[in-house]
Structure formats: structure tokens, C-alpha cells
Length: 279
Ligand code: OOG
Ligand code: MG
Image (cartoon, rainbow, N blue to C red):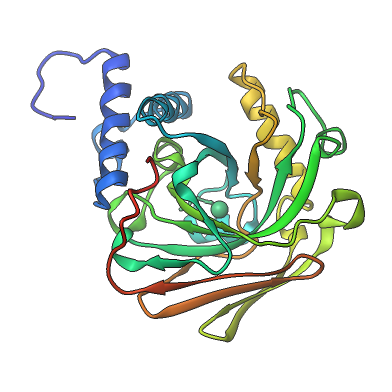
């Protein structure tokens, strides 16, 4: 986007350009100014239109969409980012990592990590729905760590900025223990997050909208608002239980959840051949 233009740029073109800007920043691990500096009246509706345009660009790569995530669903996260409304973004095959994988600092711009409950969706869910109805479509629950990497300078954004940037999504690591939802009460699971073997945060999954199932229902209802259903086979990240923590090369991150076991990764120095979140 250029501020030198003297004629009004049609909104569709602005949406397309904004999607290209966040796509390039994500692919090149660079940071851009917030979209709202040049587009101060960017609405939440426009921001989700940018995210959908980004999703179309990503699918054309082609890169597979493997699920969705909710963000800003806990008070800890809302206060940390000064954004007080839950949002969603999409998850790609390129973002997925396994428990124990090594990640590389040079593959990210400004990485932060947060512990989450992940839900594995067995059957399509079409909204509107309630938390209890939505949970009937969940086949499994597992522990997760999300690695966020805002494409905005100094990791600062407004609500529409972060929505347009696909909710800062970069990578996520799933734990290997998958538990059937009727075998565990995900409403109040204790969790400890450790960096380099030192416990740095403790929380209950109840921090996520009082119950992570409510986060799933909120996602389904937000998608329904756009005329979309949550596909069978989706992974859903329900949102950070604690604030997010910056991570650097040489650090190791581990989370332990009641009933869901452990999930962790090491952040190594250097770069890998990882192609970024959109490949
Ligand atoms: C925005 C993404 C928030 C969560 O779980 O709250 C999010 C950010 O904090 O960069 O993923
Ligand atoms: Mg998150």
C-alpha cells in the first residue's frame, strides 16, 4: 500500500494488497507496519476479508488448510496484547510440528510460545452451535504449544491488524497423547509451562473462556457468520491458557498437562529448510 496515491483505491484492491503484504512478511520472516497506520478505519469485517484473501492465496500455493485456531480467549492473553475480543485464524500443513521436533530461531521473526488445548474434529460442525453440541463432534483432545510470530513491527497490533495477520499464526506442536473427549474433563485441566526446565507459568484450562469447549463453539459460530462450516479432520487450537513468552535460540520449551501428558520442542540457532507458515 502506498500513501502517495491521490485517487481512492477500491476496497477490494486494498484487501488484496493487504493480504499480499502479510503473506510476504510471513514468508520472508520480516515485519511490516500495522495495516491500521495507513488504513486507520480498517474494520473487523475488512480484516476478516483480508484473512480470507490470505487463505485463498495460501490454498493456491498450494498449501493445505489443516484447521483453525482461536486467539485472545483468556484474560492473560487479552491483557498481554491489549486486545479484548476473541478472534480466529487458519492453520496450515506448513505450521504443523510434532512433539520433540527441533525448531530454528532463524525461521522466525519474533517468536513467542503459549500452551493450548487442541481438539481434533471428527465430523463437520455447522453453526450456530453450543459448547455441548460442538463437543459431540470432537474425536480427540491433546496438548499443544503454539508458536506465534506477529508480522507487525515491535509485536504491536490492534484487533483488525491481528485478524488480518491470521492471528499471528506461525507454527504449532501437538502432543502425542490423544484422549477421547468423554475420558477427560477439559474444563479444568492443570498445566505447567517450563522454559529450560524452569517452571514459568501455571494455569487451568478454565482460563480459556471458562471452558475450552466454549472456544470451539465460538469458532464454529464465527465461521457460520461467514457461511462456513468447520470441516471434519480439522485441528482446533482453543487459545493460549497463559500469556505468551518470547523464545530465543538455545532454549527448550515444555508443557505438562493433567491427563494429556507432555509436549515440547527445542529452539535451535540457525535456519532450517522450513518454507514458512504458508507452504
Ligand atoms: C495473537 C494471537 C493470539 C492466542 O492463543 O491467544 C493467540 C498474538 O498474541 O500474537 O493465538
Ligand atoms: Mg494461540
